[in-house]
Length: 434
Image (cartoon, rainbow, N blue to C red):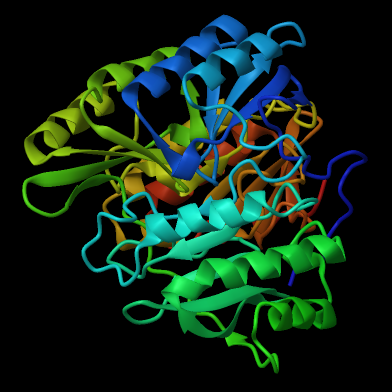
């Protein structure tokens, strides 16, 4: 295992911004929108695009929690943006610093006939329970999955409510080595048990469940009704649906699309809103959207959104590269991360038709925080003073194998891809840190 290095001063990943409490970044204030249950209408999409253009710098992020962020907001424009989005039904849900949106569900939740519980109904009940808990940490997240054909996959949450048979829910919470299954309860009791657990969590005062010790977790489980606390590993939810068309019941289909590197412009989002008229739009934890429409309409949308620059196919090489906004958008960054990520994705394109492509993951991070992908990747480039620390099979905070200018790293990746190498390590292993 690679040793960890200390993060730079002030490099801890920040608070959870909202519309009323935007967060300072390198390109101004960042205002986060938390659509209820991750769902929007085309008119709400248009309102977000209009808000980004009128009150921000026109750049929009799609987050890994299925939320939207408007960048480049100013102190003067922030209140006007908040009012405009509140009128569109996208305002903040609480003003006490707690989570604006507590639950994370798969974009096809409620539409997947294989699901074993009513995920949307349970999510609504959990949101109501959460709003009744004062002092709940802002980053608290509850993952809910019905174990249908397409789920959430492995997600980083504090609590888990996963179907385990028709009408049955496995209650879990995060432990030191991953999600822990506390026990089983009927679906109708899940929101109530979760509400009790949230109250205990808030009373203990931890920022995230992973920060607590085993005794504190046992107390929370006991308050929720699981005593004695005898946890076992909780199996992850089924993998998410990949970009492209997914047939639903009857003549209805869902088109799954992703925003490249989680970035979008007001013009691009406005184009989606126009194309999605008459469709249902849902945000995805895969930094994208699901558009639910007639199968014929969804197929037409796929071609149109591909032309607009969205990722609409599972083999798109941009899916292999995780990237943060980088400089100048982020004050911690010193490199233009999205531009470099796009060039790396193009360099990996020769592997698109090979089995090895699915095994190679690349992460370009503006600093050691690793906001876009905190976990390990086959190759991680960490920006530092205009160049990149190269981490092999590690996370952004791990010690680098070497340090290179971007052009040098790109050249090596191009050579590895052209040769069809099953891993990128060999082209970097002979170096020593610089």
